[in-house]
Structure formats: C-alpha cells, structure tokens
Image (tube, rainbow, N blue to C red):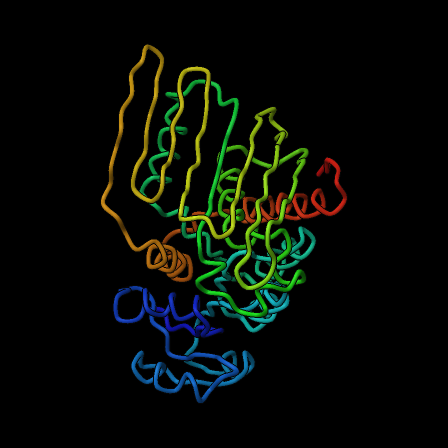
Length: 322
C-alpha cells in the first residue's frame, strides 16, 4: 500500500480523495494539504488523514511516499519539480503545465530524480477509450488518416472558482478543463502535432461562461484532425479515429462504435468504471515498480505542446507550427 499526500482539497482534490480513500487497495492518503485548514478539518477526519498548510510539510512527513497534486495549474511545474527533488513520486492533475518548456522541465526533474510521474488524464481509462486504442492497435482500420474529438460539459458553471476564471490559470477557455483530454487522446493515437490553427468565440464571460474553441490539426506523420470544446453545454464526449479500412468512435464513457468496410458496424457497451480510481491505481503500480504509468512522458509533453499551440493560435490569429 502506497502512502500518499493529497495537495489541494478543493472540488477536484476532494473528488480524488473520495474515489481513492478506503476504496483503493494500492494507495491511501495519509496527509492532506490545504490553505483552508479550519474548513477541511472535518473532511480530513472522515477520510482519516492529517492536515497541514504547506507542501513542504507533506514532503517532510516520513510516511509520505508519493504526492498527488490537485492545485492551480500555474503551480504544477514548480511543485512537480519540488516533489521529485524531495525523492517522492508525483501525480499531477491535468494540465501538467501551461507551456511545453515547463512540461519538459517537469519530466526532466522526475527522470533525473528517478521518480515516477503520473498525470491526471482520467478519460484515458474510460472503457470506450480503452476499446478505441485496442481497435487502432489491431490494424483493423488500415492506414490511420484522420482523428476527431469533442468534449463539452457544464463544470465551468457548476464548479466555478475565481482562480479558474483567470487567463493566467485557464487560458483558452475550455481547453484546460475539457479540451486537454482530447489533446491527450490525439497525442496517444496520432503522435506529435506539426501545425495547429485554432479559433475562440465568446458569447458570455464570467462565472457562467458561454464560449467555444475549435482547432484544425496536422500531425507530423501526415494525419489530420480537428477538435471542438463548448463550455457550459451539457456533457458530450467523442473521439473518432478514421482509417482507410474503417473507423472507431469512443462515445462518452462506455460506448464504442466500430465501422468497417462493407457496412459492418458493431456497437459495444461496457460497464462503467471509476476512472479516477483507475488512474490513481495505475500511478500506485508505477510507484511500486510493477508497471509503468500508461501515459508516456513523450505523450505528456506532446499534449502540452499542442495545448500551448492552441492558445498561441487563438491569441495570434494564425496557424502555429510546433
């Protein structure tokens, strides 16, 4: 059993703790970090971990073997590096960083320290996406030519916090909350991007935003793609991979649709799983040395490189070459 600290006990930090504590057979939280100690005391008591106000205190705790970061995005890179330098494994919520340079620094720090690095891309663990990867790897689709992805949800309205409305923390509107998951899927299926052209349209700003991001991709291997994200629209998720022999579509959490030449279509529905628990268990396996974390560090960096290019394209109004 890996003993870990959870840093950040806001909405998502508590979601991670709720998914893991008392449910995982591989990792448990023994230490929590929050700047709102009084408000978190009862929660920490029910979850069975002690509290402190700083990351330094968690790193000084001899019982802590690993750290899970659920903190504001701009802090991720420096905190990952700090945890790695302390000789502890680190799991960082998405996005790993806001720039490619910082993603590379975070990865390099963990590599130099010999510490595993996990990133919170829980949609990777959805049964629909697992099946999509299986079908792509099987070769049944022939030559892969095109990828599409769309992810919208209402979380920007339901779980608003002032820091999430800052351009310095959430550039590109829905990209940090939803679009980043599509970028992760693209990095996994299509590899690094070569050029990205994006646009942003806002219909209403503030605590309950209405805006869209759309982007065209050309990947280094010649695959094309496009992405869409709508903030405050009801939940919708789709990743679709097209080859010259067929296509596979991951639709929401549990459905995959496979279409092959000759009109052969197969719809597969899978049981729902707790994808947050699944990703933390995968991280625990990496800490224990029983299996590498399933998202490679190259994929982590490529995801952030695409993220940064989308933001730049929106800001500069032009195509960005990576």
